[in-house]
Length: 139
Length: 137
Image (cartoon, rainbow over all chains, first blue to last red; front, side, top):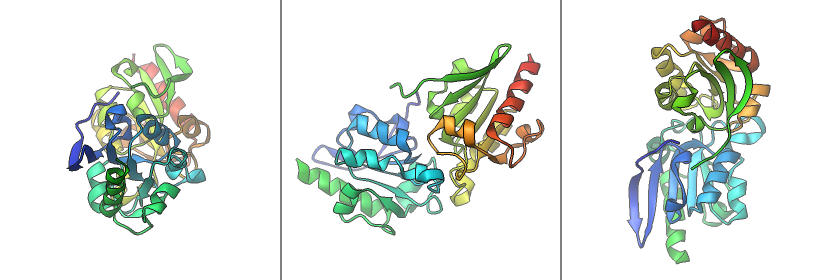
């Protein structure tokens, strides 16, 4: 497995926004984190995120592609009430979590994310903030 | 953390064609293998470190600055043939889909030398990488 040192961009009350290049680097230790990553948001990624029980995830839509596979994983998160969203592959460099966070523009959001006011066209930064605020309120 | 299994679809001598859902499932033990992955080909760093014999992933729509296939160049530096399938032909994150349905949209120089070209099926491209790997011994 790939080991990665995550970058923490925000921290409050035990909750954090972290940046990861690969969604495969997250686990149960990230259960209080909103994860912004460079990975696509396919079914396998949704599974890793659901298993880790994180507070939210923003990935790359990978151009969506066949059967919208690039964003298919966020439905799995909806089942657990976890907000998930993806940025357009033309707005951020896939594989690079910092690019997702700094440059990404949301193209797709799941129901849980939409409930927080996350919509297409919003910056990934603003969307991450909304997930982070929601996590703080959940306490 | 264990995500997936490695599915062996073909063997030739010491080399194999292996399907994984994510490139992060690949280890240094795969140094004789051709990897077919559901991941994008954005980094290449991990696959290069594992010294594999070839890699086929998803082009992720290529995207900004062709980031979805940026790893192909890095693998070229290691002399490793690598290619990506068009994201409209295979489901990203699903290595079986890459292998069964994928059509090549990008290939690095090392892959081109083996006759791997755009439009070729991922299966045929993997076969060419396996053949080259088995000859190298």
